[in-house]
Amino acid sequence: MCDPHNWVVLKITNDDETFYKVLGGWSGGYLDGDSWRINSGITRVADVDFEWLHFYGSSGSVYRCNKRSYTLGMNNAHVWTRLQELHGDKVEMMPEDTDWLNMDWIIK
Image 1 (cartoon, rainbow, N blue to C red):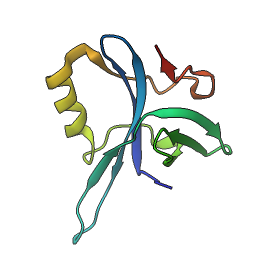
Image 2: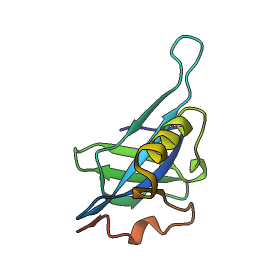
Image 3: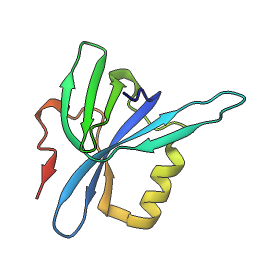
Image 4: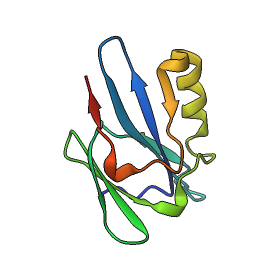
């Protein structure tokens, strides 16, 4: 299970499908630095409690995301900027107030 310090959900559209991925960021320390990951593609979401959401990926990964940590940080903002440069409006950041539990995660 991955527990990012901050996270956002990306909506990615190509010619024939739309899918969603978690972009997570981890703040490092003196020895290990910051890091980021993009999951394989969201297949479902579970509302664990008042504080946590679990995002399940197509590879079997689970991202345990704190509801209050939906934001870009120094650890993943550069990835978002680069995706925008490369893909323009084919990559969007979902709004923080998205109803995560009632999304159709794979749209064809």
